[in-house]
Image (cartoon, rainbow, N blue to C red; front, side, top):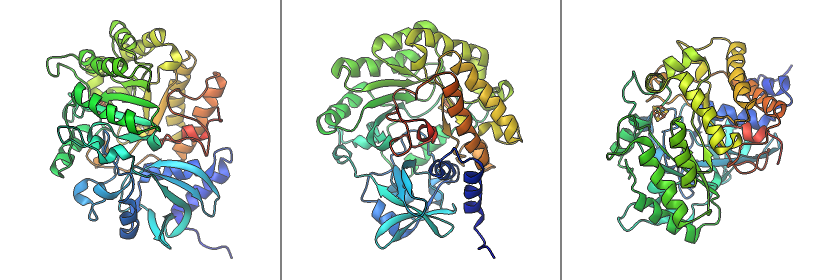
Amino acid sequence: MSEQRPSALAEVEALAGRYPDIPIEAIFKEDLLRRGMAWSAAALEVASRYKPKAYFIFSFDLVPIAQMDQGENLKAPEEIRLSGGPYGFRPVVVSVRLNPASPYRVECLDGAPAMQLQGRTIAGVELQKSPEYYRRSLSSGKPIIDIAPTIEWGYLLYLTAFRLCQYFGEKEECQFCDINENYRQQKKAGRPYTAVKSVEEVLEALEIIAATDSESRAYTVTGGSITSTLEGKSEVDFYVRYPEAIEKKFPGRWISKMVVQALPRDEVERLRDAGVAIYHPNYEVWDKRLFEILCAGKNRYIGRDEWIGRILDAAAVFGPERVIPNFVAGIEMSRPAGFSSIDDAISSTGEGLDFFMSRGVSPRFTTWCPEPLSVLGRTQGPAPLEYHVRLLRCYRDLRKKHGLKAPLGYGEPGLGRAAFSVPSFIDVLPPA
Ligand code: SF4
């Protein structure tokens, strides 16, 4: 008689059997991203000596800080790397999304952390050392982890210049986004968390990083949308100052990336002229009706057709492979407005991918984390795991169909090499 398998593990194994072209490491990674992970007290104590979670823009957790009884928000690492174990994992980097109720749990076994799913070990857990600059502060006393944290195993400096968004309140904020609420909870929890970073403090942080670090390869300048003005500046006027100053002081030291709204062509040209190499005008969800509902603020201020037109204009400015609009994978299945069938969700999202990729544009995605401080995450859990597995296949196959290499600015693709931690498309693309 066969042994009874726990349901979450059985689901992963069944999907690995049904889609043998997707490595099981990527299926576990997607499941970890959608469900989050719990930590035992012992594992958390070990992790607290490594590179901590910086809350670089959103919470990316499945519970609010107020429900973290072990102080996970202060002790958990930014990322873990899974390897070995009974499935013979090739190394795969996973962003840490906290959820004390998750069936995934990091335990300490013989002093070493290991990932378990419903009590069964699935892989070993490697932690990343804190970089030297994480112990340093600016002359103002602000810690560098506030001003210039790194993700992607140290590859990407994440410069959230503005930690709030002017799409404010339920009717304007993107329904999957907790940027404003997360800012409030971090301040309440006492984390040093600068709302608006000055150009000078970003430069001061980068000076220390440039002198002490050899891992970082790229930086992203981003933050919430500016629909009126911030410090008297429009969105482009506010954000363009950062790459301008960074490229002047450290020309070509890092790949320069920017995540802001889809801006008109003349403003996009200003970003390019300031030294931005890669532009991310995130379109979030492809379906027209869902964009209008889930991104109501963007829809009202800019509109979906204009947004798409601006992405194509930006392709002419940067070169299409340097325009990398993100979508949030899974929100097209959110209730109450989303698709109820996986077939319909993949068909819609695949249509959007095909639209952009056929024009040489290089869309990418992050795996939706239903954060409880966002509108959608208050009432529901994630999209089905099978949707995420099928999306990986759809994305990989469409890139191949259109002859597109892996997106620029994410480090190496391929299982065992990739470091991008928030989706696993990078793990399933062929090595460069
Ligand atoms: S534009 Fe939408 S996704 Fe971006 S920060 Fe504002 S609310 Fe969040």
